[in-house]
Length: 505
Image 1: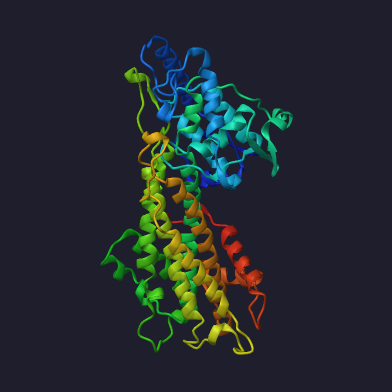
Image 2: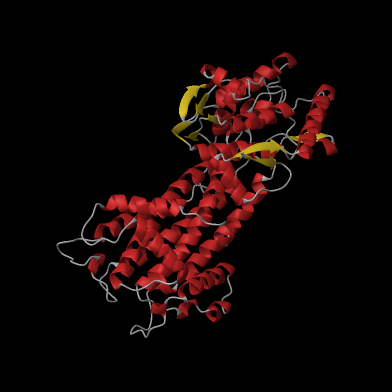
């Protein structure tokens, strides 16, 4: 039986967001949230009937057309036309996981109860999510300022029986699949005043990417720490740099957390306690707590930003029934997210950057290991070119880390004269994450190969990782088709089961 998850009663956890993204839960609206939505709509309808002044987006045009008043007979058409005209996405489709998060986060935003929409609109989004239908949304088109207009228009058109959806992975024009959708529990919706604008204004495209990125970042942080420990053992490194007393003298939270983890994993390993000829290890080994720890700090900041965002109202205008006001303001502007997304990109990149350096050290023919980690170097190239690939991905990530948030471009005839570009920050962040999984996978491949060549028993949790991986990717005795092994390692990290209490962030 599929579990039900309530939206609007309290903030969700990252484990719950992961369930939403995977489609393994059904969503329902909290009763109190439904009451807030009803009261907000009642106030807006009353206010519209009694107010003599135009209300932006309710009985006016949009953007630079905000001074064009629309008569009551055309208010529904105004909202429908808005959704149609703004569905201008380009580029590749975003993943079903991201679209599911967009739908859930839109409901979560409406649950604040200041959007002035009918409860039927929220229920229709829930029906669409629960039916398994996935609106087709494209990655390009949002400037991250007046909300994620184009992506949210593509998400919203199927609610009206238009646009495109995927059912069981197959893409349909929504109007050609209405019989299938009706069988799944929903029929096309006719929008009323304010509702199209409420659907399109909002930061749910950026937020969905950010939440999904942080779900992955928490895994990456864990594996980056664990693989760094495994590589330290494989490189015959020293355990002393991870001693707790060292880090208490510079007590950054992330640094302390990382050192504690590495020391805990390395302590049971006999190889860490034998006499060493070398006094120090390269920075990529002994400075893991400082580097990974700084990324942890950045990610914790980003998580705080996104927790505030996804539990906020980000459409416009804001219906403040307690204050008897409908206020056109700027909660849809993506600047808080754009900065956090760029910061997150840099933080995640650093896990990959230092990982590639450890790979480079492992294949260098030092510390009793053969060059390129193969028994007969020369006739065999071993893991030589896998390091090239890791270096290539690190270099691309450096380019992708150029901040999108420092850019802006004027739109809507100057009405929208500063934009966040947070959507571009969001989409390139996912490319960085994919590369970092690949980089860490290559390091894992090298560390396990090095330990196999040493012929030593690996103890504790590191031993468990070693055994799991060498079972799916046996040691390399002579040259093999390495792309297959690298992809296997990447998938191993993306899918290996982790309990939520294992993750520090």
